[in-house]
Image (cartoon, rainbow, N blue to C red; front, top):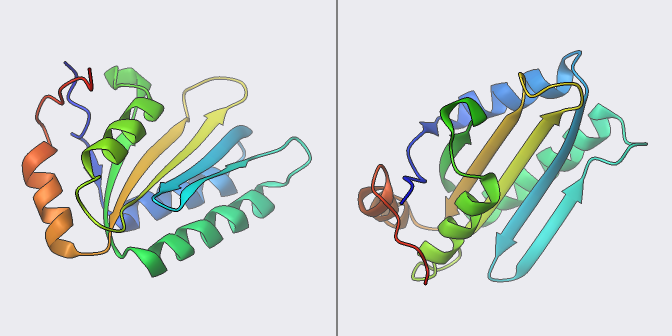
Length: 149
């Protein structure tokens, strides 16, 4: 069993990493995925889309998420640590938070077109209530997550 929720970063750190990635010289493919009880929304960084346009779309989605669920826990996923896939982390977060109201799980992936050295993968688990966030962290951070079988 993998430990899925182990590397938290602050909101400021996450936003700085996003800004640095989208303002830098590296070329990325990217996507943003937002999952909630209302459904799923995906945004891909298309070939004709400029970095500033994708950045604006990401900012808008994160603002909307903040308006709905202000208490965030952000996890950084990295290949060099052999972390589970971002989709696995997202799916586990969504499955484990079904008992909490109004949870939104956001996955942002910026994957280098030339290599993976500057990849950025973040999973935001966003709660309406702070006590739900605290409860989630106590129950799941740094602990093995059972398979859904």
